[in-house]
Image (cartoon, rainbow, N blue to C red; front, side, top):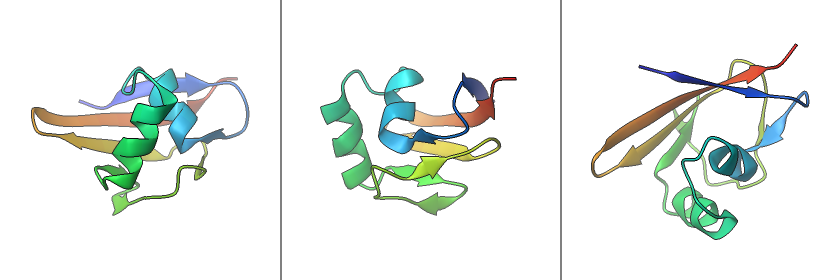
Length: 76
């Protein structure tokens, strides 16, 4: 099941999104997850920490224990 994460600005950077969604405890952890290639945006691997996420973007994080599915939603 995909978890919906509401964000306030029109976009949020991928690294910040992972921390905000509590998928990564720290910025360093988020950076390493992205560089390790376990983070996909809209079905494609993404290694850009500064990738801007907008309303409707889907983020998948592939852990050994399973996959975390997240949906970026713009707060109204």
